[in-house]
Length: 434
Image (tube, rainbow, N blue to C red):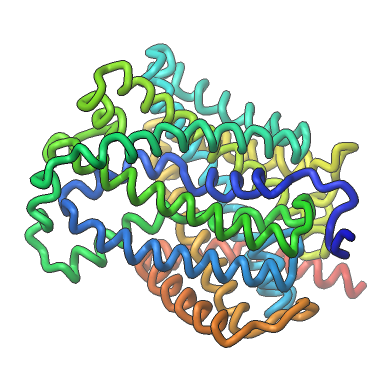
């Protein structure tokens, strides 16, 4: 018998829900991290370990929340159930803005990788066309329905996982012991290395909450959402740590630090130029798959909030496929504006600002949802256990430290972001009372 919260005909099965989580986490950041971590050498494993623990703790928090309250909207729904409409609005608003800001960045990253494969896409005129083409192709896939978006996500996730796994399985056993020496190349103390590398590696693990945003479209959500969250996050974390570590050991440190395509360089050194091209294509697929998954979030999160009256009803309008087309297109239009801004020299600062805003806003829901797991949820189907509370406490400390680590500039603009949407919340409250 179907659970009470199951949709009549679920569009997404467990495998697709897992792909949404893993695919959203494995994006453009993974393919640049080896270069960013090159100055630290194998000591970067300290940061990977800390981020992996934090990521798994957050995944456990979202799995527990989804088991207790399998309701669409993910972070928004949990924040609202724990702390009321005000907190729900703050999370829904900031998270939605962070999504379309991030989508602009992912689209530009896709254009960069695509341009390494097809020279016309690397020209000043071709790059924005490639970025916008990817963004609107993903928007079209989502406009055709959740099932269509889920299929694209499943295929692209498999396509980007296979080469990464091949690199780990085939290359790791052949690496000489000297590739891992010296352990700490930075000259800094290990504590400083751990802090610095954690700040870098954390971004590879954003997205653990992805399956919970589309809860209403997942079959048997009380059972499958926790599974998808934990399995998808574990796959992404393990593959990311291993693949980045192996790629970092293959390419010499100086060349790695200057590399714009570390995985392609690693594959070229091992198996020749054709393998390098394959990994450049893998990076483009990774970007496209992550973009598809985050465009899905872009439409589904405000849909859930609008149905509860927390965001304007305009976001709740759906077509005959159940697609929130207007909210979906609105987010892609805004992301397109940021993409175009990135290709205007005098507006590059605006694009950088949007990325800063996005990263800070992504961490805010983690703080609030970890607190929600400790505080408790209204209408939840089960109470938290002592063990889940302990994990939630660790996740709260970790996400708070990460949020504070973004710096005063990001925090101040994050506050401006929430404040900018507050008039909408006050208007909706007055309208509901009238």
